[in-house]
Image (cartoon, rainbow, N blue to C red; front, side, top):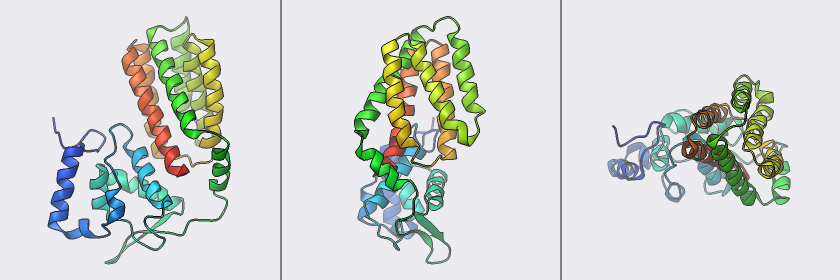
Length: 268
């Protein structure tokens, strides 16, 4: 088994640090755009490479550590500091470009440059208003507790007809149009909560999900993230149907962490 790269393109911290040191010592592209911002980046964890990379680069922009008009650290350097593949990093930079936050320039003095923050109605003002009305971190923690608990309880035993309901809910998300995806996603998670056998858990989750959707509706639907979420949904359902409670809880925890990373990135 190769130890310097995980299956999703991320590297373990030790391997990543060694790679960065070698690149910095060799000079070249790793030196372009290097400086204090890159030192604030940390290797992302396995499982949510795209989401956590997006969170960290967004944080870099929101904090103003790379001023408008300046260039981000070179792709190779960013990828090495974050411990992700350049393919993943480029997908993140494409999202940021689509959102009008950066632009890519070609040529000898090219790279990815930070644009002035947009003042148009892009959802950010509404998002800040909604954020001010809720305790985001509390909502995310409570959501994770309820979701992992529901997944574990479902794996311990589904009621009659539960397996069919769960498969149908998963299939509905897989075939959903982009504009209908969030609704079907919500229904899948609510189905898990209902099948847990705890009415209190289901009611609590319905409430926290309503709050979560208020925030999610203010950030863009990212195709890469939705594809990743679908893989995680399928893994959760598979673990539940296999009656593997530990795997179901762990995959759900990872899934919640991905959503949290996206929200923190856009909220910063």
